[in-house]
Image (cartoon, rainbow, N blue to C red; front, side, top):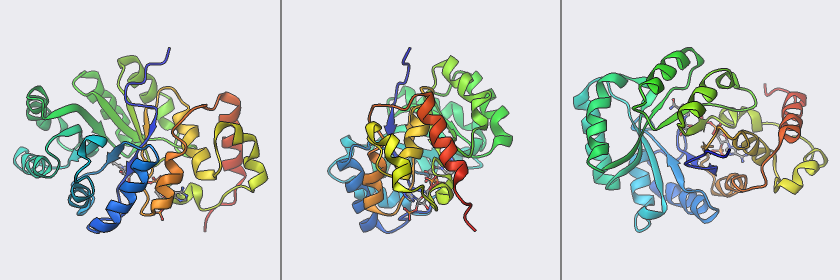
Amino acid sequence: MEQRRLGPVVGLGTWNTFGGDAELAGEVVDAALAAGSRLVDTSPMYGRAERSLAQAFAGRRDEVTLATKIWAPTVEQGRDQYTAQLAWFDRVEIEQVHNLVQWRMHLSWMQRERDAGRIALLGVTHYGVFAFRELEEALATRRFDTVQLPYSVAERECEARLLPVASDLGVPVIAMRPLGEGALVARAPAARDLEPLAPFGVETWGQALLKWALSDERVDVVIPATRRPERARENAGAGSPPWFGPDERAYVERLAVSLPRRG
Ligand SMILES: NC(=O)c1ccc[n+]([C@@H]2O[C@H](COP(=O)([O-])OP(=O)(O)OC[C@H]3O[C@@H](n4cnc5c(N)ncnc54)[C@H](OP(=O)(O)O)[C@@H]3O)[C@@H](O)[C@H]2O)c1
């Protein structure tokens, strides 16, 4: 049974993209929203990206689902980050503990903010397989509403335990690094090799990889990052049905393995 609550949707990652360039942020957000993306993922860790996004969202805040993070060693610093976020964004749809940093400590005050209605959902993230046990522990508290983890054709470790756990708990999954930080799209298959995926609305290799991840029913959102408006548009194109079945997913996996490595 379909149980996805946030998606399926292609969002927009913002690590290492426009940083403090608010004009570029505006162009990328324009393109993403026009093409159907809604969710934007950011963090105080991403330089001045939050500040740029605040400007990019001006006049259309309601069109965006903002997923940001608290990345702080103390409650005081975490609350300072949150105060800045409220000033920029008015509210936070998904407030995530970044990389599990002091998650037990931050949970209490974040929960109070959720109860007060200034945060809609609480999430937790980590980029590393070594932290999956702790992510699982955090989810088992049932105090988090979303989880963000790495997932792509090249990073499938979450399939063993975390995806099933999240699915059993009904926790929506946000997949980071769906393009392997760009490494997976550094080479693309020949156009004729993508033709079998055309009936699924796939025109580019990037879209094939994003649709691969989003076609797992346990995944709600993929958040490819780009500093290029035309790629934000392209990536958003992977966010609508029809979804791949097992045969198409296996085909994309074979294509990925067949490509020469970057280097
Ligand atoms: N919580 C955490 O610990 C954590 C860790 C890592 C990431 N994240 C989140 O997940 C997001 C995504 O991960 P990521 O940024 O590491 O990697 P990614 O999205 O897998 O890859 C981003 C790279 O792919 C390129 N790209 C994007 N679309 C493309 C396309 N259609 N064709 C070709 N190249 C394309 C981008 O270059 P151009 O800019 O030149 O397009 C960029 O270099 C981050 O931005 C962040 O929001 C969270």
